[in-house]
Image 1 (cartoon, rainbow, N blue to C red):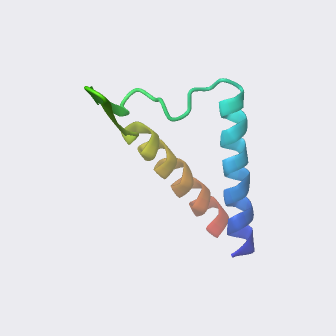
Image 2: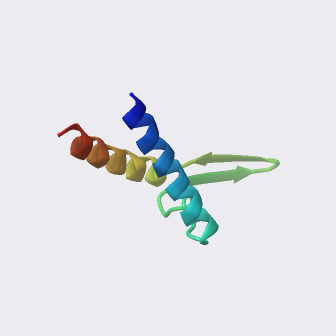
Image 3: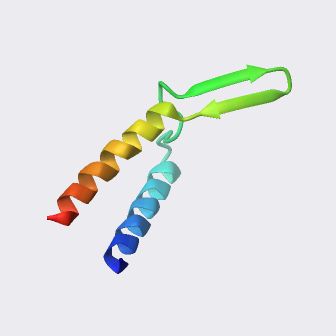
Length: 64
């Protein structure tokens, strides 16, 4: 459990560094944004798929 928490923390820190460097993580093509009147609906579809693929690959590597 400790190893998993350490890896998750490193991933979150890495994403934070990428965002500070100016990479628009979370605003990928394929993310759904609907603006109507005073409201905005944002659904990060492409970002969710990308994170799922990355986490699946990382967990597959670390489980072996």
